[in-house]
Amino acid sequence: MSTIDFASIKAIAFDFDGVFTDNRVMINEKGEEAVFCNRSDGLGILMMKKAGIHMIIISKEWSPVVLARAKKLSLAVVHKCDDKLPVLKEWMAKIGTTVDNTIFMGNDVNDLECMEYVKNPVAPSDALPKVLACAALVTQKPGGKGAIRELADAILSAQGHDRYQ
Image (cartoon, rainbow, N blue to C red; front, side, top):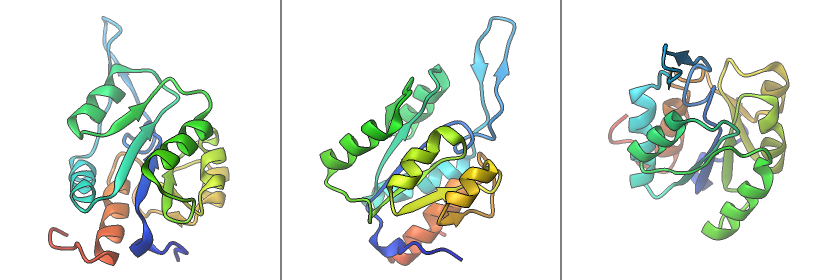
């Protein structure tokens, strides 16, 4: 059971790999990377944007796929980020949110510092055990397979924006 007050959520920061994706990467013979993302996750993001939820991707990885997905969804992105917490704090100050109304959604140990900082840490069901233990909400869906949409539906419903669910 979640301890998150979804009606109060104003912002979400996401890790990329393992949240937007199933944590796998394909590399072709030219060394180009590709990943699978879930279209329903993308629609959930677009609906949350329409509802006024601020969102950002903060990723350790540097990859054109992170930038391409962020661009397609019109999301702010900081990538090649070894220390995510200062970036999260700066972004929260810039948009005027607090630890009480911000979610960080991550799946691996390099997300724990941000997840411990906010009052509303969320993890996909296939996150590492340490991350699952830290989460106020563990989605039923795994990363890259509807976890973001599941979170979006909970927020949108609690805030009265459930027309497209």
